[in-house]
Length: 521
Ligand SMILES: [Zn+2]
Image 1: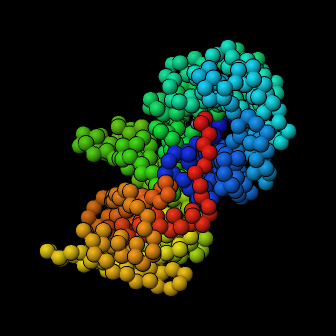
Image 2: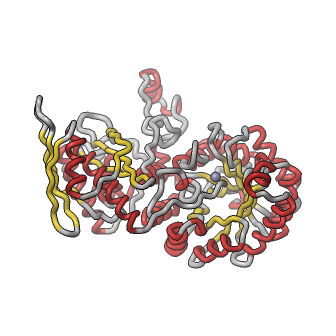
Image 3: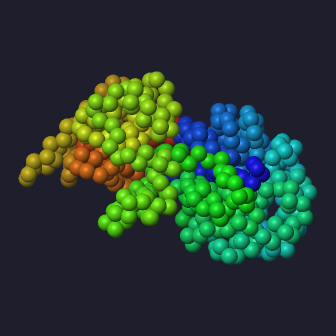
């Protein structure tokens, strides 16, 4: 019964990427889109093409290269926006134009400065115009949850007549509570003429921590599409988290399924959830809190003695889902220095990576270096190695060599050699501490002096030989860039993270990145 399936509409690359500091390069967006396709999302909202040349290009490249999901592109309710969206989507196998306009009294009066009649007219014209480019048209009344229900019904009815096939009900400001949202969806589902032939969609923000709950109550009341982002990425408190939506539906199929037979309620391959979550976290630089549902480091860690005892006797005593379901192997000790290429390749495949021969070899060489220092290499380490090694950002600078001297009573000094187009550049510097000295030397060698905003380090897995992952945020001219580095040596990881951030800054500057226009949806 495919018509029973819940459509997963991923907006990580559009709504998610709008949050400050999360900006991704075109190549990174493409990499995430490819992974979203492997994950099995039904729709990828690739961008808001009118907002900047980079957004246009990213949407177009995804439309060209990513097959499987429908590729959607956002447009305000005007011709120019819709034309840009349609143009960017041209190469897509399956395309959707998603157009929107605010319908709440407060937005119409203060933001749009338009009457409700004008807004209604603009919505209808936009849907009709979008329809001239594709059959698949989605309409969103922005700030729907604070709109007058009578007007909402009027606008949606007119948009259906104009050809809209999906009607999205955004809680733009994250204001609504689950009971109310359920009532809105139920009312629209029963009162909007012609809605039976359309798909109702949810789009919830998490300002009150209700995004996932609201989306799910929407589904229970007749919505068949959920708009969400990986790790709940998004402005302010973020969007509804894809992994939580999917796993709630998956784990509680008894609650969401109308059919007796056990059919998957979404097209998501849950085993790809962990890998997708890690990829998005690494590329955006947004760290996942340890207690985050589903994908946090502690989400499957049972440590209380009474739990462990229960689980050893019977897993379901305390476990409602298994780590394996989201693609963590469950077995802790996996690889070591004696693991051959074949074993390593096999593990990469099981973790969901599709690597070229060269990428695999590159990752394997790095794995051997890590395994040499660290006896046990876990799945999390393999993910960190691959994501660190097989990177998409152009390496303008590469850390070739580093030496840091620390001695009691002496000022720490660092020497670095940085490889770049012009050859090897060497620099030596002092600092308050070893990381500070290394950073000063890197600044000298690269000639880049962006301001360091944030620095953090964490262990990828437990134990004293754990891989360290450093994350730094640097800023220049009002834009921020995040870099990451991993190593069994935390000072080296820190240095790599700093060089990575500089590389991202250089590549963004070359691409002419500028602050983009944002869609408040
Ligand atoms: Zn939104």
